Amino acid sequence: MAVPEGARVVPAAVPTAVSTAVPSIDARLVRVAFAALVVLVLASLALPFVGADAPSGLALAAVKVAVLVFVATRVVRRDVYALQWSSMLIQLFFIEAIVRATSDRGASAALGAVATLACVVYFVAVLAGLRPLKKAARAVR
Image (cartoon, rainbow, N blue to C red):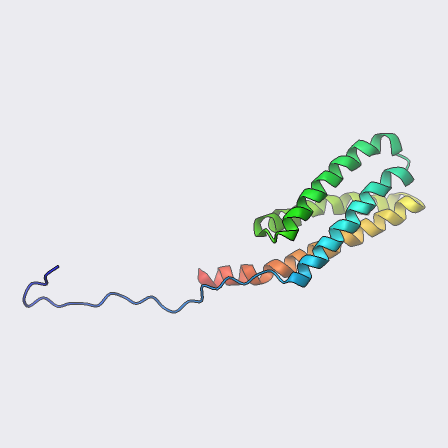
């Protein structure tokens, strides 16, 4: 394109140097989150057999385990979106576990306490893993 004589040429604005490197989720935190999910699956499988709700609890345990296994497959892949929604979903498991830990007696209460601890560990590991990503996303804005 020809510039008319006497016209002033203004150079295009050069974008500022912004790091486009996206931080990844720490592998140790992923392993901790996965281990917490494994403990939660084992506790969910054991609860119907030691609790009073054995006949009706098996179907519910199967659904809970299926959800947790799906979440675990996404955690292993380090799927950020799945980590975000699973950090909210795990709170439902936490509620169920804390109620069982505080209202039941014996082995059922102990499994509820283990499940509660597993939920807390998972939640903290996921939030710690997602923090650098959220920080980087805010810096880009």
